[in-house]
Image 1 (cartoon, one colour):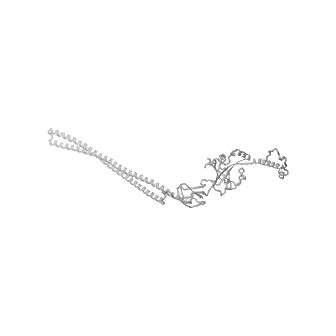
Image 2: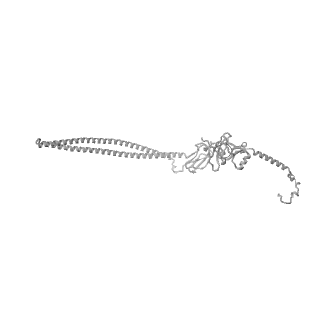
Image 3: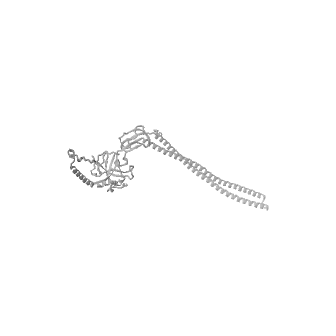
Length: 450
């Protein structure tokens, strides 16, 4: 009750007659309370000088040490329709076990004998390739035979040309001889004519010499005709050589053209054979993809696509699987201001959700229910939550982590730093200063390159 009146009742009315006033209004409780405050102040001052272990905290969750041990989903590389399930959620499967069977939904793959019929097409094309190979060999043989025949014909024509040239030489010699004979015959005829004019020879002798001269002139003309005929034979022989070369060049070119056409068809057939082989392999592998199998040993978590007859696209998630053989780890996050304090190989303490623990971050010796961990990876790029990701593995020198831990459950981690007085830690927290920077022995700033 406020004492705001000039009429003070406590001075006019006595409360000593009441038992409650007799028990309250005395001076003993002030003395005890003052002693309590004094002791509390002394104890508080002593506590301020007690050692306190600095720490940085991070909240995260359980994961696996290796990427291939983390929960995964199984996808189908082809679209299809679910036909049969061979497992149920929670089942344990081994690597290669069939999880479900799917069927085809694309009309170009509906044929159940698609692989066999494509294989028959492949065999037909391979036979076509063999036929073209035989045709190419036959044309090569034909080209070789034509080349040999051309060489023989050319040799024959060249021999005839040589004979003609030799005959020209022979006819030339005979022509010169005929010219000599006609000169002799003319001189003899002139002498006989002169002698006959002088009366020394008879007219019959003159006529005889004239006849011989005419015969010699006829032989000269005949020899000139022979020489021209021989020269004409040389021209004919040269023309024959050119004709043989042109004829067989045309034949060989035609055979080569047919051979190149056959080779082109052969190469085209070989390309089609390769394409059909690829299709047969693809169809065979596609048939094997109708059975969705487990990629590794693990447990079926959840059927994402359920039911029978449900269709899906390629790449859609069908079922989730959790690997059986895993190495547990903790994925936690620290603030950027605390990142320089974290080093590879540094020991940390971890509290798992669901396991009772009493944690005193400043007094780790009195903490209960925490487990040891070691920093094995420090992310060098900030995460979406504005913090840096740290990966912690079990500490081999500490007691083992609980067997019942499951991936995805929460975990709190705190790394122990330097020992400082409590008053210093309170002062640091009030001012928002970071913990003391230090480099522990045996810790690494950067990952070791192997």
